[in-house]
Amino acid sequence: MVNSAAIAAAKAYEAQARALEAAKGAQPDEKVPGFGELLNSALQSVGEVGKAADAGIMAEVAGKAEMVDVVTAVAEAELTVQTIVAVRDRVISAYQEILRMPM
Image (cartoon, rainbow, N blue to C red; front, side, top):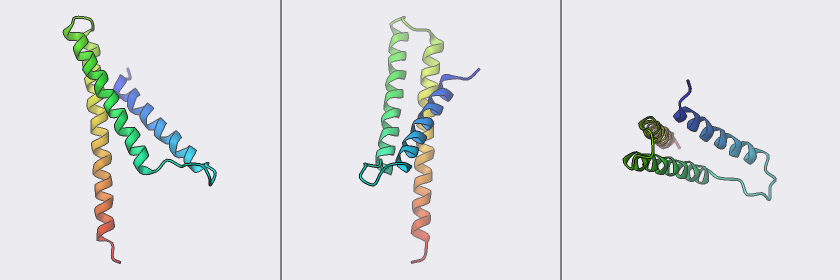
């Protein structure tokens, strides 16, 4: 069984891949999303997943949700944060490698 966290991660990766493909086929006068914009959209996605997890927790406290749904939402939020942290670590590593290059 595929959990919702894996589905959310796959959807996020698919959205970023579509954005990159659109950028490749863009005309010279079209606005191409930059790295900052892609990162910003990924961070907004993290915020949305976190809000969904919070809403699930509040619904459980109010007795309107199942514990399984809450655990799934929290696991999805945790996976999303772990993915963003991994990307951040790779960006920092790449930046440090660039700094070590001889001029």
